[in-house]
Image 1 (cartoon, rainbow, N blue to C red):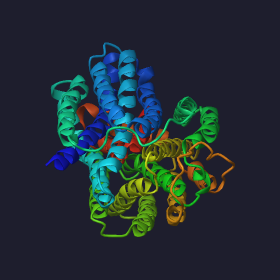
Image 2 (image 1 turned 180 degrees about the vertical axis):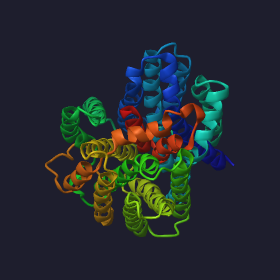
Image 3 (image 1 turned 90 degrees about the vertical axis):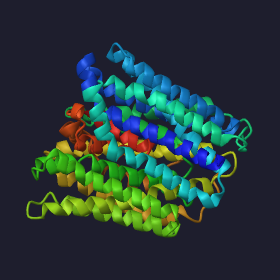
Length: 507
């Protein structure tokens, strides 16, 4: 019974974190209108993103040194407190402070849950648990827009922030019951130097990502370039050595997660806008395209949890399906291609990402020695978040510089998906990680080249901004497209959240 309660508590917490990321993206236009300070709109997203990067890095090392319980409960408290501050905020500045605390707490929760899975569940159950985690991010993207719309219209936007802390207490109590008697106290790693430096590099990485986000809009190209340079210096210090050259094992696992997330989210944020502007589809109908992808994502995760396919097949087939779905969706920009093709195209893409995501989470724990699960899990999540922000920002800049040509975005994201297909076989065969992120920047060029073609070719912030605007601006009605454009991004997990924040922040 305790194991069931534990699983229920884990999934409930993950669902609440996912729901709030999605809900905030939908409700923020209403918030900004009521509180004023529209000029601070982007900071409400980029501030939370910056805090989440720092929280992920700190939480990973903390969980390895002291065990997952302290960062978990600290994260739960911070997440709830941040939401309460935001929900009661009298001004935009106070709301941003609450968002910062919320982002930090949510990041601690996410990485601590990974370590908890490693410490409590036997390896053979990891695929099933991570498939549940994936579903915990996908489901809010399907039901969240309606819930947020009803709450905003009937009780006001503050209810979107203030309801979740109460539900968090319930989830926490359920988790506490499930933890009774479980061997999760204490750390598995001795004190290690360098934590202050890692936190500093995490902060620098967050600044670089924010610069890219803001630089992706008209007239700010220098900021985008500066942000990319900052990330090129800072990000490798947070990833396993060899990530940027796709070294076998954990480095390629982290790299593939970033490539898959970047390709998927940068394409997804553009889909509703393209369908509305180019094919004159309604907001609701465009949102249903993303709903199909969310459903197939959930189904593929379920298959992964039951190990229907092997891990190698999951990664190769998943990468190929992402590439195929992007190609077909790109073809929808051609007027002679039937509009109905958009629906199966995104179902295929969602199925591909659904195979990849939980498989990479499982591999991360398999390739981590005891005492390294937290640090490696944080590297996985940071890489995913930053790759997503970079791809969304760069594709947005390309979209605008090409005169709002949608095919440019789909071509760029296709490059990333193909790079992921090339990296997928390298996720196997490497040694267990040594827990030494920080020297990944030793001139590694291979994945850098792929991520460059990736990044260079991956961009969609401003366009997505409109995607977010396409209906996010109508958040009070909780319309499907906005919800799903941003929620679909978040459905991945913390990284998706970052992509959603990037896109909404750019707006």
